[in-house]
Length: 327
Image (cartoon, rainbow, N blue to C red; front, side):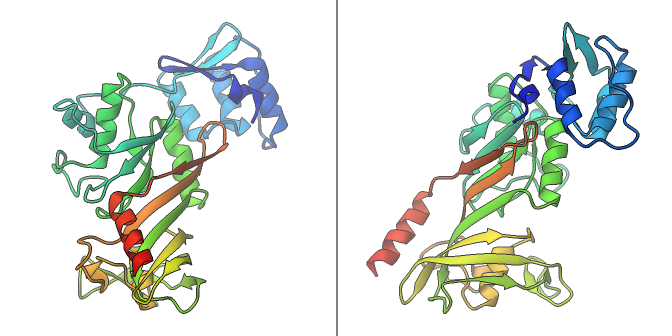
């Protein structure tokens, strides 16, 4: 990790970086042909903006946004960037709800720093509301806002990816614009890894494999998705962990992130998830799909270092695994 990131310090709304080490880090990168000369300490923020925007240290969009609000300044021998402005409490719908109650404690914090938050979503909780005016029904987004409000640090928290309402596991949040831009790009470039564990019907013929089948909407059922030649590319890799004559525990890794991808793919190969009645699974033992996100891997939005976050197995999964071992 570059020395300048190691010595980056948050001071309230500002991120302070040692100018000398920041410039050295920029010099070690491969800048474009039109990078202006490195500004001297104390240069006007406009010159600093031009250099930062072209240096590949930060997203150009973010740098220009900072400059437009006076978010670039010198502090002694350090460059200060307004990286942590608080959310506008009256304009942010999540914080409007969060201010009404501080009782959000259903989603444990798995990881947190000044840039990221990972919450452990329980079964039955939606990540976000389904539409305008739908805030307040107990979403994970609201839990995130309540958590930051309780910490006295109400930053503009936003989810980076989602899980189905009845899927449990880790969900990644950004806590500022820089983190959101970087993590959104990581999602687009498939740099964020997600590993799941599921309980499915039957014993798989192959202990491991890859399902590469496009997924599209089911025109006969608006809530469903289906394998379709006209759908979007979808790839799921799986490995059997344990099995008996009736059920299998499988570990899955997503190469793409289509809606209901694991549920559709496993149903398509004849092994629907236990409890997933929408895709052919039996709900006799479980009233929701037996799917849990057990691991989340992502590059830190400031340093680029790999962050690995694990989610503990929920009680419903432990019970099913014990049952499979005993049958």
